[in-house]
Amino acid sequence: MRPHVELIQESDLCWHDAELVRGDGKVKQRNLSYDEEDGSASTRVIFDSAWHRPAGYHHADIEWYVMQGRVKLGDRMLTKGSYFRAPAGLCVPAMSVEEGTEVLIFREYGDWGFSVSDKDRADFVPRGGNTASDEPGELTVVDSSRMEWLQNVYEGDTQRFLKLKPLYIDPAPEGQNDKGWVTMLAWAPPGWSDNRMVHHPVFEEAYSIDGELVYNFGTLDAGTYFFRPALVKHGHFVAGEERGWAGFFRLDGSLINWITTEEQVIIQGNNVNYDLETQAPLIAGIPVRSKTAGDWDLDGW
Ligand SMILES: [Fe+2]
Image 1: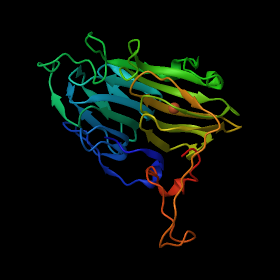
Image 2 (image 1 turned 60 degrees about the vertical axis):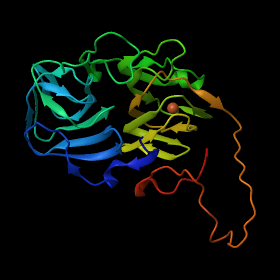
Image 3 (image 1 turned 135 degrees about the vertical axis):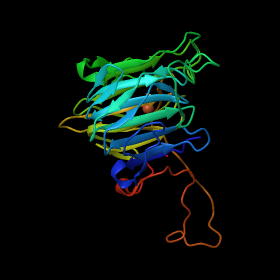
Image 4 (image 1 turned 180 degrees about the vertical axis):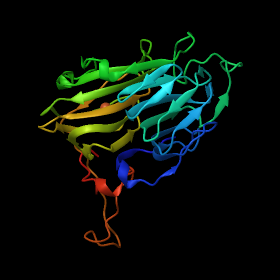
């Protein structure tokens, strides 16, 4: 259970002590989205001091994206644009993070738990929470700054002009779109637009890294974030003329865009004892928004 967040500006949020147990150092986090049932979370994390943690396994599927600074993972040095992912139960090497480093950390299908260990969790094969694969999972490490932008592979005619850098893809089997996983960077080039509404059978979340994208829920610019549950319509996109817009994306399955045009929503009823000018009800289902995002104009509802 994660709420529909659409949209918030990270700088509107308060800081918490980071949920990085078994590690030593002073670290803080902002909660972009939090599932209070299973402990899944999407967080923006800043290291106010150096931080170190011994080898061990997480209790959730974990992803890190380095926004700035340096993260040592075993003998690998991760810098700006680097990413790693480890399924729950997979032993990851000792980590050291330099003071001042900023990252996005995502947990899925579990909480902040971390067990110090030099081997995988013993009682199950670490694969990942939503995979259809029978293969054991592995540590994925990618440096996006060394990748080229690729052509979009997902449905929708103008969507093909979007550019992608796939970071972790777990393909869904035929007919099982709700299985698998996609984590990627996406870039809408300057002036890109798509005036249709789309929805899809998987959740979608994104943290905006650069540029600007105006759409039905407002304006995505650096530091804005949304978590959109499956089947929520979104669209009327127009990317900024200068740099377009780039964001870090996660989806809990294969993406297929179902498209709506000429959408129309009709709400009807008679007011009995209230004034339509000053007491008319809000519609149900307005997503979580932070103050910088302002009011939603209900486009696309
Ligand atoms: Fe989408």
